[in-house]
Image (cartoon, rainbow, N blue to C red; front, side, top):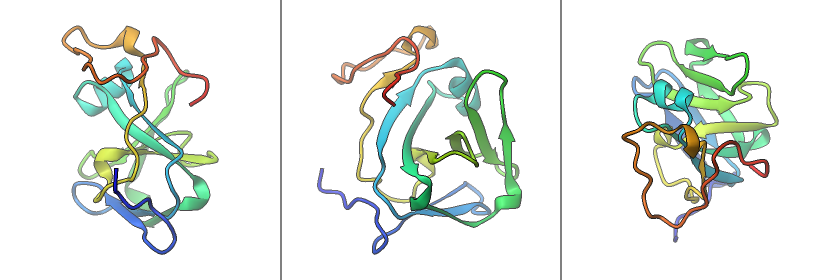
Length: 145
């Protein structure tokens, strides 16, 4: 891949569209995936979401905590976004989990990881044609992720 993985000496920065929320990643990502669930689809306005997980210790919010709005469904993962520009930023158990789920589109550089599998393919949109990318596909959640 050739990309430098995020670390303390080479942080990876990210932000929302308006720049009000800014953060940095200082640890390598644990894994990355494409999610095709209906919630990610509606939250993003696209096929779903592409995100990666990083340990909480490798994440630092630099600005805009007060701008982050969280949608917390009863039986699903958090959707955190900028209340000014609407950018989808974080997920999983934001902000209290041991890992931070970061939308790869919010990063300003190469995360040093590529998506490794597709989730919730059974609930993808009728127009969402999965690419022939060789990645494993799971109808629902993947328990190892």
